Image 1 (cartoon, rainbow, N blue to C red):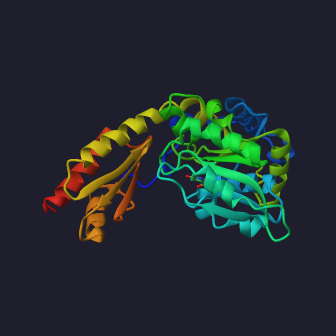
Image 2: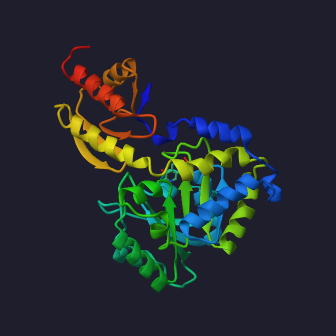
Image 3: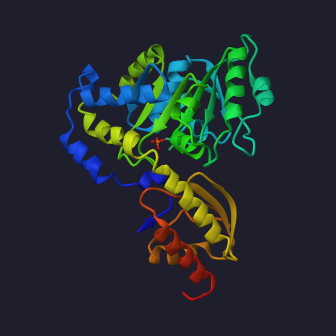
Length: 336
Ligand SMILES: *Cc1c(COP(=O)(O)O)cnc(C)c1O
């Protein structure tokens, strides 16, 4: 099966499975797991921060960031399309009593800083207290421009807001710009990183921040049921995600460009966007259910819709891209 639905489907590498089997572990709730501690130190160092926290998921890491930056009755500013607003079950509001203030994303994924400024609430008993500004990089595969990150940082400082990055795919942004994690992270007060997407770890994310923030987040993590015991089994794979999988992301970006080029040769498919490891295309087929069944029969798993997202990752090579394009081509020609 060639699975184009997401980079979360990546299988752990053989090296990860070996490292997991051999990991030195302890009870991480006591702070005793050497492998978790090493992973957290590695992540903090790579990002140029004081501390990091290993979490069960990116959703948990984002929620911990929001709850550590904000108190009950506070507000965070974010994109209308932000994962930590739209795709995390409203967790900040439900579990943190934190009000989201979404703002329409611009075409390039940024938020217009004038609009963000207009959404900041005055210090008045009628309003929630605006505390935090949250960005996402990459967003829908798109890399936020470096110049914008510096502007957002200066803006947040001027307005007295903290700045958080949902960096689930921040390494895709770094690799696409041929730069380091630190050069992106330096603009933020905290960031989250997913190990379980293109970096191929089976489970886990990280929250990175200063000591005080991570201390608060650790308390919330325990309360939310995220205090894991011999979690070094998972962190061992996470270490290899950070050391062995980052540079490889460039292959996914190449394969995404290759897929976009190949799709360009089909009449029924219109490529709308190709950025980092994602391709978005309009599928103009009359019968999408039939197309989906056809693709599945050819071993291609896709979230087929009129606007279809295809995600490249470690377990999809050029041959997988060719298989998908050929299958689409056969369907188009009615040779089914
Ligand atoms: C996947 C993702 C998350 C959440 O990660 P999970 O591990 O699936 O909870 C957060 N933000 C973005 C941008 C993501 O793509």
